[in-house]
View 1 (cartoon, rainbow, N blue to C red):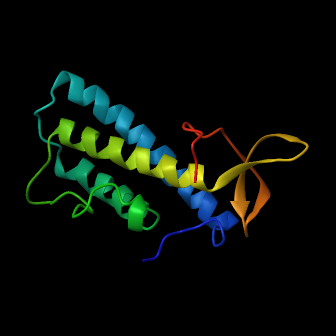
View 2 (cartoon, rainbow, N blue to C red; view 1 turned 135 degrees about the vertical axis):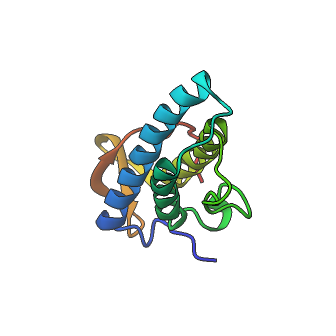
Length: 136
């Protein structure tokens, strides 16, 4: 089982992770608006292409016990999901991304704030407080 752990997180992976997390947050916000207006409307193929692209990138981080839903990796291009389907999946992904992030951040002695862990030590890369403090 290949889980990204703090020992192998590096600055490049952290940057990629933060980009993916923010992209899913943005897409989730947009899809949430559509879902409230028309929950059962189908997502068009243009949007689905980008949704699946972001999910594929997130799946490189969300493996093992971080995997949001067993048996789901992306939406089927031939069976278009509804707006509410996409919103539901994004919520699961965001929760698991936050769990992974929470497991890889810590505080520093004598410094205020939260920092990513690289090589089992707090790095200089700042982040925000975990949403749930019961990490690890």
